[in-house]
Image (cartoon, rainbow, N blue to C red):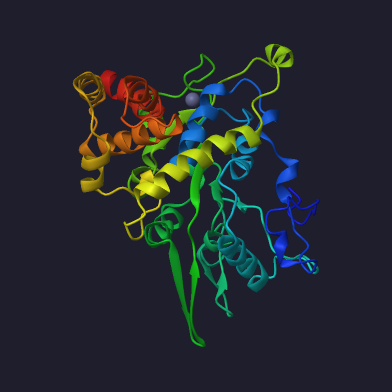
Length: 351
Ligand SMILES: [Zn+2]
């Protein structure tokens, strides 16, 4: 991906005058290019609309990276304040090309699983921003999540919690923002092909493999969605997907509702951040919805934590439609966003 590529500006922040050349890196990517992944894209829209983190599961080469790269194109357009923050971080870290003005596109960062802690979190002799800060206001994408060491994943915990990192060095302390949407991808099993016949892994191997990402990281992921296997020839006949511009409009509308909802709540800007008392206030379910959720949680052994995630997601699903209350279809929709839980629970059942 050529992040330095400049295209014409989108007219968003042009009132500052001619001095600003606007870098618009997004024009290269559009969800219209993604065919045959309607269900996954709907889950991604849900994630983007409510600030929910996402894990994609799928075999090698199924398009996980291609999809992840397009997520910044459906997040709400950056405010001027957000643009300035991103520009500043890129400038400090030497990522800003000479002549580039204000960055208006949300960043997408995809560090390799061998990334050093300094490069990921920030550090070095000049206490430079790391990937978590370069992804500020954008997307941090970890591909092959199970290949990241436990130490690396543990290091992400604090920035994900505080949305900020503080780096201490002999010369002083630097603090950088690190508020990003976390998107990860992994194979469903060590060979990558579960649940197809090609998979030769045992349940034990699969459970062990998935266990690598359990704990602090998995706890922070609301949506776990399988990437559909699409037949190449069938794909050729499919029409283009929905464009990023259309999806972004839906996301922005849902965000507006949340801004209004949380206008008096300090530090809370989207549904994913709702506290337990907010869930009680904003995620009331009628009898039918409660029954559906209860049945699913009994079937898959969902903890209170997972039920809270599902309720936050259901709130976002309702917001996407401008619905005041969470409806049956919202609950059903979000129950389809826990593919890893569902698939693992089937495994536990037969081991
Ligand atoms: Zn396998």
